Length: 339
Ligand code: KG4
Ligand code: ZN
Image (cartoon, rainbow, N blue to C red; front, side):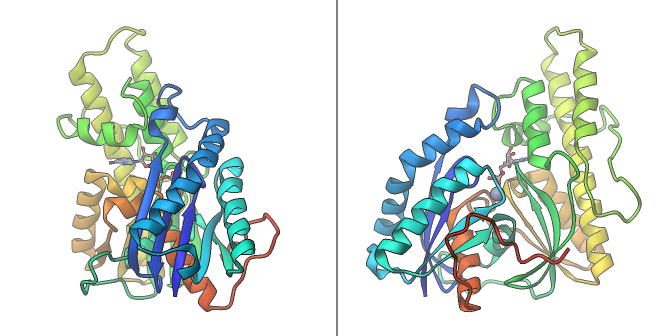
């Protein structure tokens, strides 16, 4: 089954053609980073307007690269939530219109469920190791920080999520405080390599022993207080590097600790990490070390499938379609989560 996956829940317009939820024939992502950079964060109204401009060329390019026409596509999958409602509306309306006109089945998918399924995608047709169900998924992005128990391609249970800021949001806001531009995750990652992670011992927001919920807003305030300590003056570059590294270390420690707790609480052995923050080199390193210590197996999709893309949406849609799910005309996301 060839599925056209469409993603527009935040600031990336993505489209991909994926066979049987696994084999990526094409994937195209139009980033809006430069559009939002001057504001230091995503401006929802600008994001949805840009999606309107890019969605048709992005889908056309995905079909072209897959050497397929729209008539060759068997079904359409689209992100239906959660995300910025104006942005989602663009992809969803487009998908519904194409599905209606071309008489194709379509299904809306939950963005947070799509992220971990990126681990099953492959582009080269090579045999690769994939996680075994049930596994724990840590979804860490600009909009979400959630731990999920994944018992099957369509069976997700939320184990915990953030009570306030998402991890990526904290990265972006701290980067802004440190004058590093937007999006800030990559900049903090890069700069931290030359910084001292022990420069500031930021409190690790663990909430309570064993809790799988997250909270990052206090950490962001702690960085703000540190920056204010410089009285609004220029901070020396090595101080910026050290604060960045100390902040990153605190976030990474919490994510790694909670992922370990989730593996223990669910007696699972496989851990999948996805979402934009999964690109973070320090997080990857510390998760790898933790997995080795715990005898667990760690799976992280390649960077282009960690950040938002249409291929993960197509993979998620494929399994829902196989289960017989079809989208209606209502706008509400229908997550299959058990809470
Ligand atoms: O998954 P994604 O592309 O979009 C959302 O669903 O939000 O994630 C984007 C987020 C941004 O907050 C960005 O700063 C963060 O992922 N990010 C990183 C890194 N690369 C991207 N955070 C930390 N380290 C990175 N290397
Ligand atoms: Zn995402």
